[in-house]
Image (cartoon, rainbow over all chains, first blue to last red; front, side):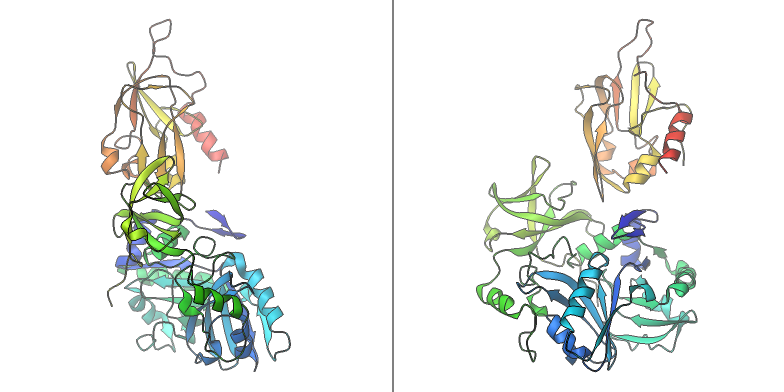
Length: 347
Length: 133
């Protein structure tokens, strides 16, 4: 167990490596109740989110989800978010646990003058995710009123799981097919137990934070605090596509982001494969021909690839021709530029 | 969790097994569980001198890097080369296949191998891990 943004979270249930591989080969069950849920409801909810976030959320159809970000005026990322449109007048904004207060306060502030209510609903939701190629088969027999086969990636529906009311979405943070089940906190244990029992024969195991981190790293997904932060714009993180300059109206950060989009990023996020068993960890220096050229943001062994991998911010775009190394506690270890993501599931 | 009775322990979660003047050294099952999956072990060179309580290597897991302390004084006579290819032995088999290095320890006045006086018995070590939660 570990303390994480004020929550007691399991780092691992048994072995993080086997939990990781179970998600790639069969399925894993995650308790993500720490994630923040902020409801934005009312006739002006879409307009609030268009102004408050970098995405075009008013264009999102009910029952669909979008990955987006909330930025400061200077373009720095306050958090990365998944937004679900539950129905015409209500959106559910999913924030990282450590940022829930910041996101709530920014949304409440940016909603002023609009016909919309912003509520921190984190305490109203538990979140259980079932992720992996076997996820749909495990969830289907427990699902009521849900068309799982017809549910697209980044879509969601309201229905039931194990007889408990739930919002079920085909989203996740592992690079696999999978579902996230938002239910009432008092229903979380029965939902968890039903999924664990139904999934056991298919190879589902409970999976902790450590496996979640290596899964998202293989999938090339950023983690707030590592790849994203107030000193990073979406463009540095290689996620400039989430900024929708062509949406109607003003939005917070537009000017700074437009300038950054025009000038191009001063650094860029790159993938590295490490030439040893040692792990290039957050904060370790990256060198090009022996000179500092960047910093590792995340690093871990890749259970799928069998080698350590990392993401790093590199200063310039011309690292391709130079010999890259990572300084791992005094030793220069060879590193190879690698296209992101490291892992892509077969469709 | 297993704490074999015949071994000696340190508060830094190493175990020592004595065979004559040779001490075999590894980390305990408790330590391995706390670290999580071990991915890399850096061991002292054969022939080098190690000092009780001083770092002589590193144990790297998915989530952390920890110093490996030598529990004894002496000269390193052998290291477990299998850990180079399969560091997960430290988790799977901490007291046998996951041993790390061997040290020839000096003898005391009675010709007995000299272990530091503050080493813990199995019972004392178990107590320590329980109070650590």
